[in-house]
Length: 446
Image 1 (tube, helix red, strand yellow):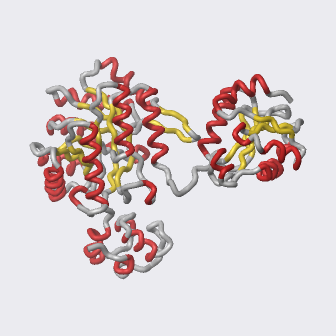
Image 2: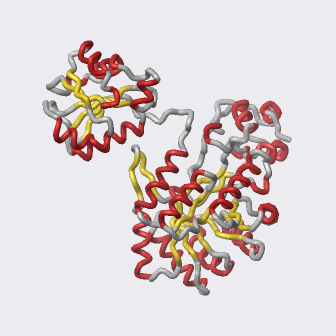
């Protein structure tokens, strides 16, 4: 039976030391009761209290770490089924699969390409997180050689894909220090794989064909001394995989079923590169802790990473940029001044198009409480008066020698009021950001 925050608090040291990253022991106890943190965050809890609270207060989904030091990644410890209930905490990790039978002279080139699969979107760098190395020969030494080359050439943590304990043991001899994820223990090899995971203190994927079999395996492996596990339930296709991932999530979070209280991994099986992106995107949405794909093209990765970036934000906190005057390409007194909102996606879209135009410009960002152009206008968070006030506070007139500003075409209605209430002359810009480059190059005149 779940303990209340007060029951948990009675067993805490009550020092209010703050070392758990909460201001008081009561605040920490409330988070424990909600299963949003684990008891090991309290450095002063007694062994007696640990015995009473550890199992009862543990989060319903275990936090699993892959890699070490600056390479360390985290998955799991999620608390909700739907992001609007709170948020999703640890973004799905994206792994690219590399097969062992790749020609040796191509391996380094392929790893280098994967290392560089990075993009900048709405001011944030996004990219691939893991290398998944697949063993498909009879020689353990061949797999170990490939793993060693990947360790030397890539900063990305590794997933070792082999159900052969001998091959896994050989690979661990050259990679255990990097804390790779071992894939996978099954009904036939679980004892050997569990011993390898325990001996090298690495996380282990547990793979089975049914939920019952999976729950039985995780209990056996846990009793053998392995705590950090990731779950993989065999599925016949995307529909079945989505159903299985959802069942595991519900059992862990809603039923607090400990044998399935671990993050998951999903490997794509679609052969079409387009369908593989769709499959991978589905797993990012629900509920793949790690998604392993074979596609390595930028056009495949960018939509997958963009979906992840959008989903793993706090839906209750607007995604904003600071409301201030921004400069693009070192503008001067004759440069145009564009006005926009402080919604991150709006701002970075406008900034990107201004950058593409190669026209040095100022961008005046108005505080609209994180809403885009039309939503801000409809919600009365953006008005002509707010635009005028922002221009004054940002001292735009001191930066330029003209009195012209460009406002989005979607709010052309602001024009008359701005011109009546201020010295600014308003130019109606395009309704779509994609037309900004041609507009600035062809239409802008001081």
